[in-house]
Length: 188
Image 1 (tube, rainbow, N blue to C red):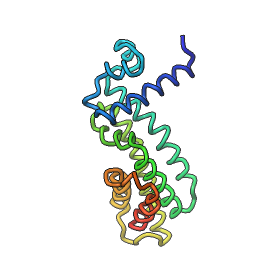
Image 2 (image 1 turned 60 degrees about the vertical axis):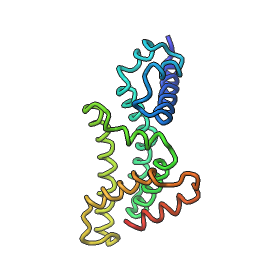
Image 3 (image 1 turned 180 degrees about the horizontal axis):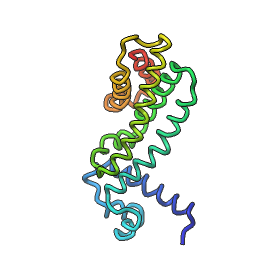
């Protein structure tokens, strides 16, 4: 029987290879039998860990949130200056979104999740929204944002700009990431 560390390591390998296949072939064109073959499992063996391909996608998504989004949110929430908080959050968020193809794929495929799984993912995104909206409110109270700014719309706009950046950002020019962040935070 594998130790918990070995099992977690094995799951990480499955997540990584499944993600590579989803990016390379598309979610719809990646059967679980291929995921099993590519990770050294039988088809029955892979179903020991995952109820379905949707379940695998959900677990990969949750793993990505734990590894990427939660630490970013934690760092942002520790910043007391709202302007720095917003700029640092946008910088880190856009960096993750533009540099990691898997995050873009997960955002794109999230609607494929079962309603109960999608709700859990949506809850994490709601925390992002709340952080950005509250930061904009705090900036507004301190005179650092337009007085009449609708902070709800502002938060959705800020998040939307970040989430759409990977669709047009040129990854072959990573040096332009600073310019992108400066532009996005300047728009806010």
